[in-house]
Image (cartoon, rainbow, N blue to C red; front, side):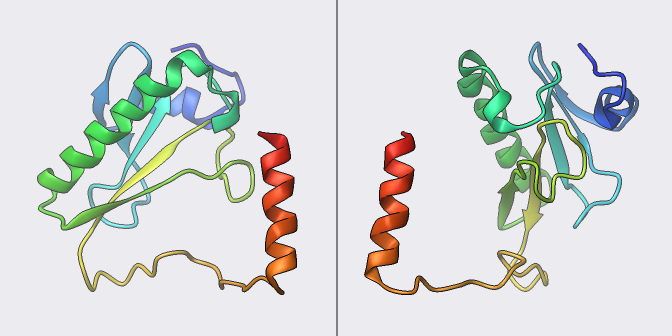
Length: 136
């Protein structure tokens, strides 16, 4: 694994309970899981956020996310999975990682963990739409 000297994942990932590994990524059990079977998938090379992941790795990396989501669901006899990535805000470790969490109805996990907010009006929605489209 190409590592960053100060990155927690670069230092501990290979000493964790590994559930999957290929040439570009590594998946291991989260040591503080939301539920048993909560897996973290990381790229082996150090990339801080999703936007830092090279374009040529995106398809391969997310193919592994898909494969793990299926395996976690089947292996944990779950009804589904919660798949999430934080970029900088709420990112506890500055190394890209995908959370793959087994889910069952009534498990107590409440969708998003923050309050939803409505747009002020249609004008605000159009302004936000335009700002994002301009950056694409």
